[in-house]
Image 1 (cartoon, helix red, strand yellow):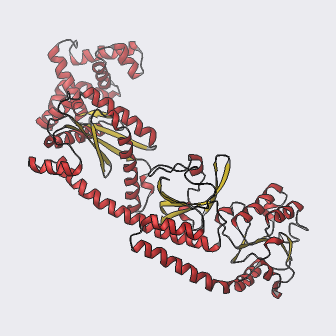
Image 2 (image 1 turned 60 degrees about the vertical axis):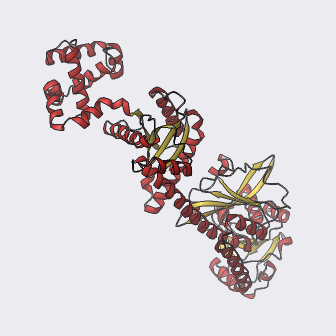
Image 3 (image 1 turned 30 degrees about the vertical axis):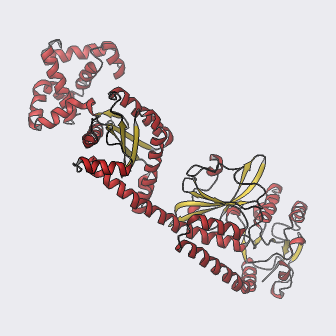
Length: 564
């Protein structure tokens, strides 16, 4: 293996000398890299020898000190600076820092091109890779065998922690805890420093936000400092990713010893194995979910007619068949889903978003006035609320209040997503649940039709629309509308007036002129003038109950036929 000391005796690049940090003279050199970017620390590995002209840190003492400290912490082999370009002699502060941290600081003659030095050193260092390759191949076989034998992330975590001699934390893509592996010699125990609750975030928001958004494209780990109880803990974060899609993270709690080059290679191998484990776990989960959802699909479409079958399947899937039930459906519309070009990645992202919604529904289940069963289907969350038959029926007002509060919780917790909630009626028997499900879907359909996305509606909010839409032909509806309000409609389209909207607001606000004018952001007198013109055009004083009924029905048809 090639060390810094060996480097000083290579004839083809003689003249390189150590000016500080001689304690690290026996550091092993695995590879040579050029460092001309101050943001490169995240992507460096141990045993790298860094070459630089010094351009990036000339005249910046703070950056000079930081570079020495960071390279020492990463366990790099040393820093070699090409002289006479930006430095005639190396700054004393860099020499002092190199001596403090034991990082070899070398001077290289101006006459050598960096590319030539890299080629010579890499050729000399290549011989040590035979042993390293054998070790890494053995480790890969161990990890792969654990996966094949079904050892799962528990055994992988322990094997990895014992191999790199540092505690390990495995997280999902949302930074929630999957598993962790502790070591007895860890001076800062995980349990006293982190929030180690399964399926809950382990690290603080600030720590998570400090990780680069493009980390899925990086092969090397990122170093971050985690502050806990007055201590600074060095952490190494590696994404568990396939095709730039993140399935989770491996976090090394680096408190026992510094990582070596072999450790970094093992981490990358573990990341690949972990990705396979996460994909496998997702497929198993999807099979279980499919069996459960097949039952719910049959239940919500009314395909199960036998009471004995319903009883058996309800017992199997945790439903009480004697309860009264109603259904809530939440339509999810993410604003950024289209940025995923890959259809598989898009579906995976949608499923994860839906899972978050289901978790939030269960967190808020105590406010539902009944027992919650919740799952997702494509872009919709389905909530079944069961209530004991010995309790009074839940009112429409109670149901809507719960849905409105749930809607606010979803909007607050999940950004850049629109939620539209439809609610069906409550039925005495679970065998009638499919009716409530259909009604909830119908409420969403009408909200979307009338441009009310992002709102909450009960099926009975649209009773008149349901009656008109299902019992009368469209041609007859059109004829009725034109006879009652055709003059207003034509006048609006010809002259750009707003008589139809004015009349709608007049009825919405129960003939209260002031409230209606306020809702339309116009002066009260302007509203009165419009109403007088409407009365004149329709030939009515808007007082006859029969005429009022017909006009209101015509306004409903106006919306139903989408004539806005």
